[in-house]
Amino acid sequence: MPAEPRDAPGPTLPPGFLWGAATAAHQVEGDNTHSDWWAAETAGLLPGASGRACAHRQKFPQDLDLMAAAGLNAYRFSVEWARIQPDSDTWDDAELARYVEMVHACRERGITPLLTLYHFSLPAWVARRGGWLWAGAVPAFAAYVRRVVLAVGDAVDLYATVNEPVVLALQAYLHGAWPPLRRSLGAALAVSVRLTGAHKAAYAAIRTARPDARVGCAKHVLHFRALSPGRLGDTLMAAAMGRVFNEVWLDAVSGGLDWIGVNYYTTMYCAAGAGRGFLLPALVRSRERPQTEIGWEVHPEGLRRVLGSLARFGRPIYITENGIATLEDAWRLRFLRRHLLSATRAIADGVDVRGYFHWSLMDNYEWAEGYGMHFGLIGVERRTLERDVRPSLGYLGAMAQRNAVLPLPVPGPAYAEEGGR
Image (cartoon, rainbow, N blue to C red):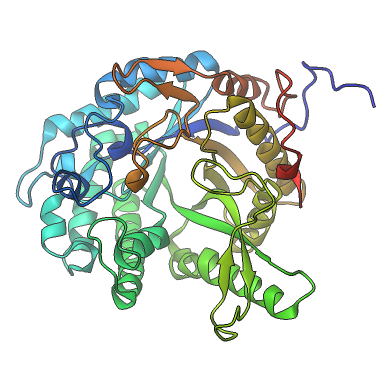
């Protein structure tokens, strides 16, 4: 077959499609000293400390300039509750004003802001009272949300209330890998339920302050597959896991969702029983496909399938996170193309997908993984914090300008396995 012309556009995206990148405050801003994460890091309870992170708090004008110059038209970033309310009876108006400045800086550059109100880090004073297990956490969160929304006014139309609530419950309260480093199934279930209340309270607060705002959440989803497709137990287990992990939490808040955010990264394989009884699945990763730095398989077709499964909610969908941890940017280029093609196939299937936010804008503090993961469209030199723009930023920006999936700008490694179904 003849080679695809390098400048020929592929499938187009719907008019008004958002092309962006995403970050989280604690991971990029630096010196988040009033948060539970900072407390755990400085106490030596985590493998690494965030420290200055990427100094995005000071460098955001330059970082937004890089986005705008590339051609991106949207930016998903989070507001840090611990900065705005460093103590229970203290509000820092200067910090809130800085976030308002960030929002307006986006608008001035033609970038649509999607504001996340909670992305894993809590004020230390909330953590000391029990974190999300504290009964007062939900009303306190709603009060903070209302303050933010009133401050930014009509400059923000899109809000994500909470990021990956089920992941937070599992990582912080079951696996004990994140603050508060608990290991309790009961606590994890209680926090997952509490976060449904947090979303509902935030939704009400936002819609009261801004009736025309569009409110959603960013939900981590996995593509579950049967380890042995011909084995009925594995197939049933994969279907059950997809329902429980991806959809049950959304069902609980579906009355207060204007849109759904999908954070998609990888596929997990289900083996029913695995010597432990039918109801205890083994979740395994492929040993045959390439693994990223963080140990995840790249499986673009899974994005189309999870988007299709969430279409039953009847809400617009934004892909609020999708990215790859690697220093091989040629792989990232291919990753972008394959996943965006998968998204266009979902759209052709009838799914209402309205935007794509790559995770992440820059290499950052990847929570308990520290600085060893490289998800960024922009590299960050750890000593000087100097930015290194990777070709993938230009490639995503070029697609944004054409509103279409474009051929790869340069030949890349084969990585043929990642396209498998």
